[in-house]
Length: 320
Image (cartoon, rainbow, N blue to C red):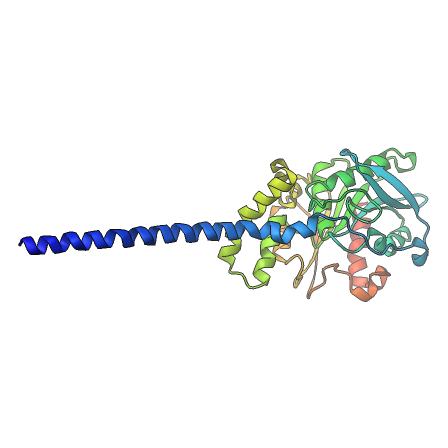
């Protein structure tokens, strides 16, 4: 009997260290996984946002129009370059915003010509940290709405734009900024948003899935993207995102455009924004991977893409 008891005691003594080793190993593994997930956003985003984007500028004369360069100053003290294309008696004025890295907003002079031919003025704003504008950091839409606001303040200071509707038009990050702008700037009267992300963490993780990452891992990753954004931009900035801001349309007309196969801002963002948007709004979808919606061969002369240009001009004529 004593022999059996000694055997049991010996077994317990051998078993306890093994259990501790397993527990410690699991804890270490969990810590390594968390550290790995936390490291992904800064590794990917650091070089994307800490830069000033320099790229090819386009001349308005190339598009057969005249444009006046206008300097703007934001509330946080940045100097921005912008270009004004005037119609003598505008039905409205459209503020253009481009994407995170490409192209320069001056690539939209073709769009400005199309609008001028249909009775609309334009203000093309080169957002902070791009081209001739000041700044060395991209804020993925959380602060760029101040760039739009500077443009709106300029427009409201001009007598020729008294009682003229202001419509903000953005593509990609510019589309997200356009949504944030209409939410934060009540003087904006309408929205055209192309290929906007629903939030930066959403599109960050949607793209991880496109690269083959399981969806359960991307969901775990989102809080780490938000954490990194909080350290980079301030945690108060996290509330400035298209999913929140689109809820503030308050009856103002909006046109949301996206392509079903977009490989830069996946279509899921469009679906989230539609669910979040209140009331009535217009949508336009194109089959395939068309991040700028307009067919590439028509971008310089968007009126040659009749389906795309028709959606934009119909929206403007219906509402403004």
